[in-house]
Image 1 (spheres, rainbow, N blue to C red):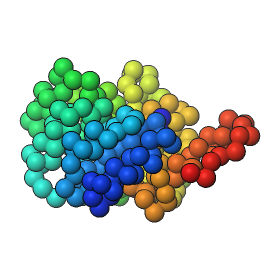
Image 2: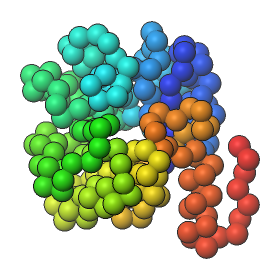
Image 3: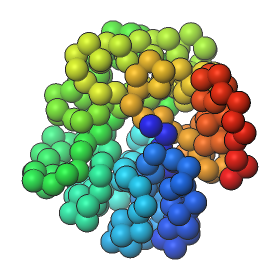
Length: 232
């Protein structure tokens, strides 16, 4: 599945981007840490496809500057308002995570438990340990993302995909950065359940992120198709 992240200066602008994204992607990610004063009631009422709600802290590349309790409270609000997925970092305080899991009981919302490294890509055993740490929260999806300093870094992250599949765990795994772009193309073909693509190049939510048009064109080429791709 291809997911388009949504960030904007206002709730109104975010809703407009959601409307543009819905026909192009399988789901969208509301980066409420990058939507000042995000009105979750309006945003989730406006959805036209499944929605991930993410409120990333600054330690993992996000924009939320408040307390951890307030950050997680916003995710709980998203669950109560019908979010399809919420993304929470594995390093979040266990008590706060437990409160989120309690809020999710009896709802259709699913969890994505994530870990990001913007400084590089650690050794394989370290990455597997992070994967195992994420699994302790019994998420629907584990997300492991690092920054590739060398193209070979991608191999260590991509090998997590068959490792997770052997464990029966859905995973998102790829590398950021220019040298990580190849992993964004390869990951879904190995079984990574979601990959991220921006509406436009200037709207990328992470370094090395391709646009939705580029991703769809790559899909077409790799599948041997000849259908013309829309300029939308």
